[in-house]
Image 1 (cartoon, rainbow, N blue to C red):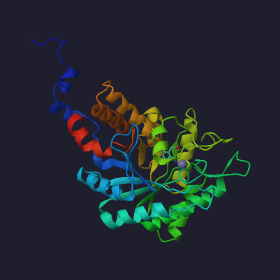
Image 2: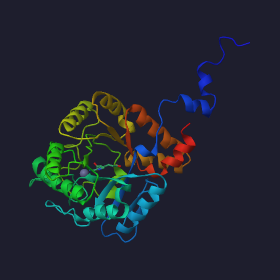
Image 3: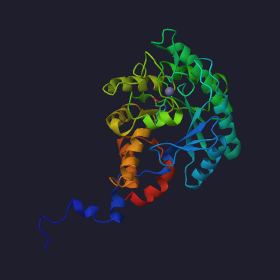
Image 4: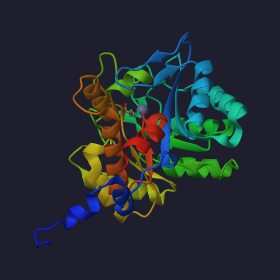
Length: 331
Ligand code: PBG
Ligand code: ZN
């Protein structure tokens, strides 16, 4: 005879079929974007420490990787081009443009191709913009002028989406207007609008060759990225970018900023992306290598948290494993 201590909430947790029925969120590979790195002058592709399955690709291996990714359901990409020759201004984006063209030529409209727009892989010093003569300030206007040219060239080369990650003021509006005036009004603009000054970008900076380097006065990105303790700054930055014409907004990193994602995605009615950055991703992978966590299941847990917090798009180095991991661990 059942008593009032009988199962109540546990009734709906008793097996995976029932759990499937009542779960409130479902993650799918269709909402994921796979980052890709392509490096000029590289002879053989190189693995990236901590980012299992991610390589610094050559122009040839890049196309093979995309072909493999398509087979496992990944259709959306975010390309990072790493040019060989670094400069201080008048940047040459032609290497990345050629990669965009070759992806388009190979895969047509089978793939959605977003391209990161920034200068940190192109500058001698590794900052995301143009440094002043004294070396103590990133010049906002000079940087935006350069970024607009890069964004236009990527869009002309065939990008479906350009994604400025530099954090300069006013770049979204200027890029939107320039795209529209050039007849590229169908190209999406995804803003890294809530990009924090995080310590979790380490593996990426090795992959993209983009860490601030040399004997600089400005040693880090604190004067342009958002301080971890300033969620209001993230709100204002996202609101501003939405008003300037961003189609998609972003919180980056993911797990350490779930509160920001949750609040901003409720307050600002735009599609929200979250970037599960290299350090968060590598953290899970490195723990898994030591037997401290079940890697695939832990990734699924993180992705579920992003969707629960309000993201509709997840940018993750694990997109290419997602189908397999989700089938196994989602219920
Ligand atoms: C730089 C940029 C960064 C990332 C993407 N674009 C980090 C940075 O150096 O500030 C981070 C991505 C990651 O860590 O996975 N514009
Ligand atoms: Zn940058």
